[in-house]
Length: 278
Image (cartoon, rainbow, N blue to C red; front, side, top):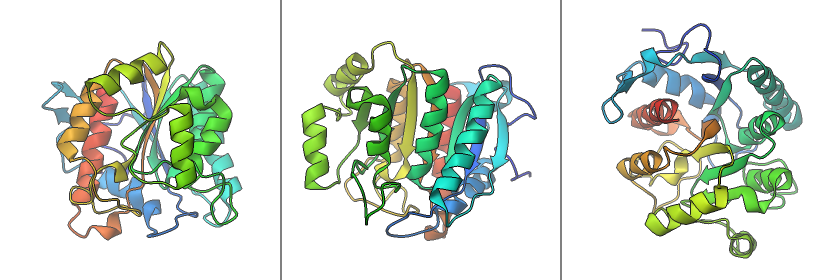
């Protein structure tokens, strides 16, 4: 067993294929810390599941993706940590890869989107999440996991943000969502609206694991009751398989909060399915 890389990863990726990048940062977490240990736990769990996807009839060993490992990030310096993520992601994009981030807290999505925008200026962002993450600031800080989508909107405009699964936020965040129509339901009508909003644009897909109900994934820093089952999330990802996803991340696994290890296993399976699906 080799837990230093995700199962099935090669030394070098083919042009246009995925490059995993671990972003072990949780310096702005507001409730339960530990997401910095997420990338390592996801990789370790990947060796306990099949590289073959039963649902997709595809195998990671035939995919040709690579794992760039974890960045060494300064946990007390958010701006410097984000700069490092952006620099490495930019280099991966320039080499022809598509970057798939492993978080870490949700703030790491910001530099990954920034790097993707340099190559894909018409990028749309699809957020699967329990929380809106649209605060202007949190405890006086504009760089926070609670503000990450507001910073993303400043880059791409609200018309290119699509949110699914949101069930928590402030009154001001709800007003923003209603004003700009960013929220789509995970049903047939909502998915039609999602596709109409995205159009033919390339998509960055960010998956905050707390979109799942805590019964299915307790190992996350800000659990929110009333979420999806793992099966429901997998079905939604299958429904979205026709999107042109050019960048992605899975964030907010805090593995030490689930001693059973099942949260890390679920996260690893989701990463596998996304690598193969998109």
